[in-house]
Image 1 (cartoon, rainbow, N blue to C red):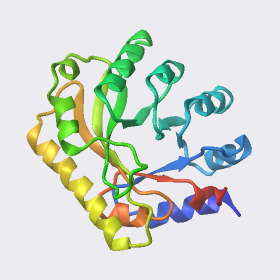
Image 2: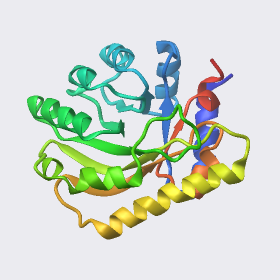
Image 3: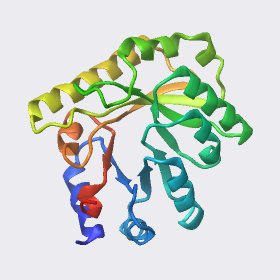
Length: 222
């Protein structure tokens, strides 16, 4: 298995779409991450804060780190100094903590609202109404150290590609609705739709994803 060749193959499949590749590096050894870096992929996605911090400490500093897994408020402080984007904001409380920790580090952290689009109980995420409640809240409007730049969603884990396509299409439509409804502000600049993983990233790209999160198609199965 050649990590560089896998990255080149995926990037060529994505060419002509608006999707950028995030290499999902969770549970992968440092050697694999270095190989991906050497293969000209410098955007990495991690599920767990502690693992991301440990890798950040030893890998090249021009890597762009994205936190894509479920995030607990008490973990934000450990990565607030370097994380490029947090994909999994699913409550106002979490967003407030990110804002607080970003301020301590004199940073503005880009965030995505995680929207619940799957037909599964195990997935996290906001309903469309809950997402709008956050954007409408006085608390959010007062925040200076976070920037909501888009939405993230995880499709149902199914072989039914039409269902997956419809879920992605729904998320993209919601994103477009938000763009039409909310004027850009300092802390709200909608440009990103994070959807699509190893099994469905091409469908996601066709449906308008700007960030695809790909692990096993690069590094092989766990």
